[in-house]
Image 1 (cartoon, helix red, strand yellow):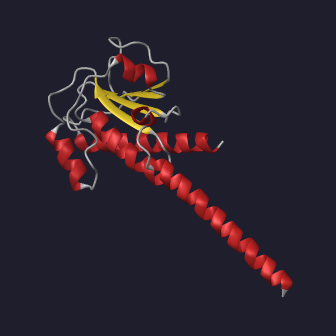
Image 2 (spheres, rainbow, N blue to C red):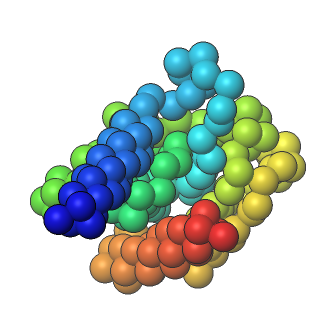
Image 3 (cartoon, helix red, strand yellow):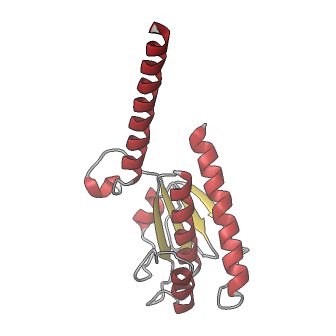
Length: 176
């Protein structure tokens, strides 16, 4: 009888501890970006760049944000262009909404020197980065992604594949 009581207490303690860990992780994933709240810890920043900031980087950031959230990867995602268009490509906005994704940006914007210098990972999707300072983080070039205006389905497929590979890699690194 005494052993049963000890076992019950141990199981209860483990369950309470697990709930505390789950709550802490859930709360951390819902925190605003630390730089906005004045916190000293910095979330890893992923910067998606494409020439016009209106299609490829928008698709990539939308897919990345969902996949990262699903995998428990807490990161800050930025999308920009080197020569931005005035609006997100209507076909991209429609496609994302139709498939249940939130549009990650309201309007394309030009990548800044600060974007590039503070990003931990810079993904260049068909960009010429010569007008920007050298990135301090890891640079990945996804130059094999076709223009969505030429082959939307293939561009979308390629971006999804690359995003899933990147999220998987970052999750593996985080677990080490």
